[in-house]
Image (cartoon, rainbow, N blue to C red):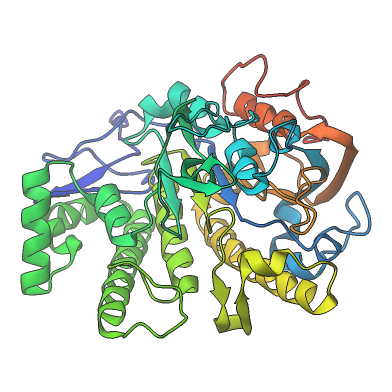
Length: 453
């Protein structure tokens, strides 16, 4: 019997300005003109952190019962099809998000501490200081295994300098990822730029020429890799051919959605009182989030990166949500002073954000991988750095983890922790699960028990 060739499971299709990473194809041969990484014995583990601002209406967030027999309350209701993939965590605290003698500035601190566990420096000058974030500790350790060490995205632009909250730099409110204590990892908000980054070959001259040709001749990025794609299709098994066709179709659909969003945004006049969107950003906030989410999922699916952060909005955001019937600004409403009408509107905003997370998680769950799905081999943290937006408190934060982490997490449960259990314990545990043996992180007191039963 002829020996089975050592085939690569991670391949790129190449063309002018293009390096289109592919999902795992079990039977893919490394072809001339293609670059392939070493074979992967098991699906890799991915980690993502999703952040929402201004706290939560906690009565509509917190399940009434602990354990496996819990019901999802209103805000989390869109996650019902994913209930067995969730671990809802109550009782976690970010003490370093509190004033601790620094006075006002809860919003800036809550974002600055979210993934660092470190109290941000309050300075009247230009100096900023937080701490290395959990995602970047992981990226530093495993980033060499993928094309990009990490991916930082967000659905709202923001300044990186100046004061945004009671003497705190805007850098704190607008970033959750920090490469080092003084350097935030600036997020990308433009889906087109994320798309080009993920699928471009990083040769600027070629990428520019490719984009010019696509715009001038109404071509797709796939047009530049057709030759490679056709050769690959002829050499893979039928099942992999189907997988390849589905993937390339998904890439084209995302590309078309970006094109439509750009055209609609360019043609649509700005209405008085609406949230102005920069050039290239979809005018629909929901579509903006979902496009970015689809790109993040595709980056995980193709193993372009294994680490991502996603800010659905900046901390302190005062965006209005007219598309769901909430005309007031989010931040203004969060100071509800226990007004039931305002609390109901906050709950609607919170519900909308979770619905977008549900869309992204469902997409991950729909992608088969190994003996499970992409979501099964991921850990996705969703939450806020403030609990109740009116009180600005940092204990009992709204947090859930989605995905089984390759068997490292027992999902389908609501776990309630003792008062003042550090959120940093969860972050440290996830750092460990990603293979980084850190002794402590931020104000952690140890690993978080109860993630696995």
